[in-house]
Amino acid sequence: MKFFIDTANVEDIKKANDMGVICGVTTNPSLIAKEGKVFEEVIAEIASIVDGPISGEVKATTTDAEGMIAEGREIAKIHPNMVVKIPMTVEGLKAVKVLTAEGIKTNVTLIFNANQALLAARAGATYVSPFLGRLDDISTRGVDLISEIAQIFEVAGIDTEIIAASVRNPIHVTDCALAGADIATVPYKVIEQMTHHPLTDAGIEKFQADYKAVFGE
Ligand code: E4P
Image (cartoon, rainbow, N blue to C red; front, side, top):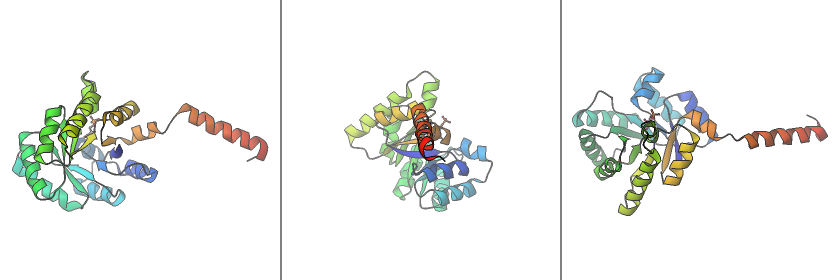
């Protein structure tokens, strides 16, 4: 399983990129709004940091296929690595079909059941984004959805990649890796949490103490 970072915060993107663990970025309208910057500018800045797929979502207020197609074409022009993120609706699927035919990559978002993922894949989506954490929030096991989609795509020989989204903690990461996600898109906080283990910290302290006892600083 590969990692994308799920943020529009360029400082967090730089930190994760410097660690060498991420190969792409996902954003959504809430994450862009949180940064308070112009969409095109923040996306271009992200593209100058990370050399990999960058998902930029159509405006939350654009709900018709024609509008999403027009915006998708503009998003694709920002940088060759752009992936147009489209919500899982009938209009969204129509937009995915057209953008795919034009060679524009798409990420169908807000996937909450396996049939939605299958439809998005058949419309031509490059990626599907099932939302793990938001399902857990309503007492439905999000990881089960990742497993189902992975199984269906395997059986059907579908190339669309599964991005486990709405990842909230390190256990989610392990769960979706085991469930067969191709990618997990993870906030920086969770990437940082994943680096820690108390025995690693204790081991470093002991090595330092043992070394200093004999060789000094
Ligand atoms: C990514 O594609 C999603 O937009 C994101 O992971 C949603 O995460 P949230 O449910 O924590 O807002």
